Length: 96
Image (cartoon, rainbow, N blue to C red; front, side):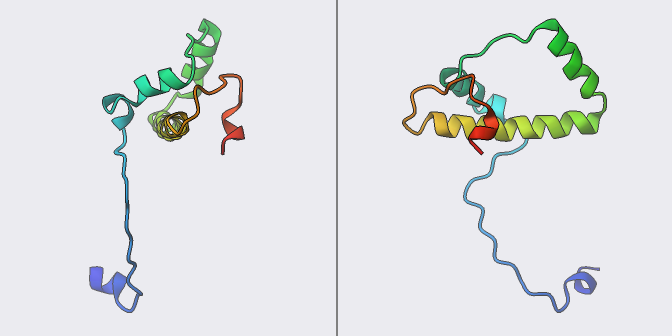
């Protein structure tokens, strides 16, 4: 089957310099680093309920978790690049 699909196709030379496995944010200490870059605060009960309602399927939850991991990784990276703290009132979209 591989021959059928790949026959005549141009090979792709791909180099991945750094790879973070899904679910690695917590285990790699990135949440602690994030807390050092941006002041954290508890979500109010209404916001928590809305999040739970929106993440009503496993697929939606996984998509959200993946986006959160990317955002955490990004914010930790800029937070550790000489910037002392990130303004918690600045929207994430400003950085991307």
